[in-house]
Image (cartoon, rainbow, N blue to C red; front, top):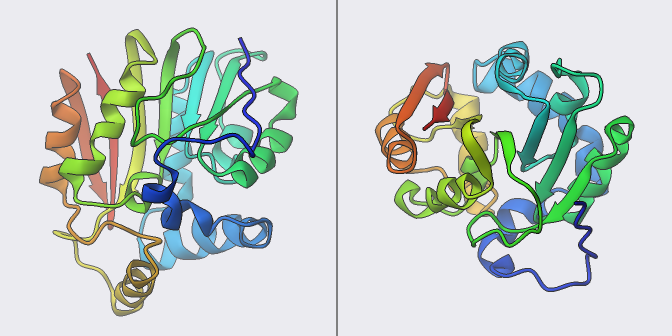
Length: 228
């Protein structure tokens, strides 16, 4: 069932998560694929976008929900196991939902506006895979607090399903000078909330909700899958 939420409707917890998502305006999203996925991934975070796309190709199902959709780049480029997957888009930012839904309109996506830091009250059948790409570092920290998102998303994951994604870490990895400067600017504007995020904290947050967690580092990025 498609659950379309109008942008004017109240969404719980908006103020808490607002700075990290409000930066995504129509103007900034036009630059997102180049600045984040091309420039920043390669030169700042040392994690090629091709590796993140491979994560989708390996784990996306024919019944998939993406949380934190940005421009819909990965959903547009990944190889779904069927030509007509069931696809859900979930985000707090209506502009991201509009942008991504247009990009993957061929899949007739279901649109859900919600905050992952709050219980996700959507009328939808469970999904067999959930992607959470580059969302965690935009949530206010520390990881022990933002990890509630895993439980809220797991509530909409079918038995045996997979949650997967990636996050830029702020601690326990060696950032280059330019990357650290960008991190500091983003943190000062509350765009990033990952100053205390490290591999151990992310692993624990995932393990608190999932029985099987696979996590590896690629540059300054943690790439993970989680299953029960």
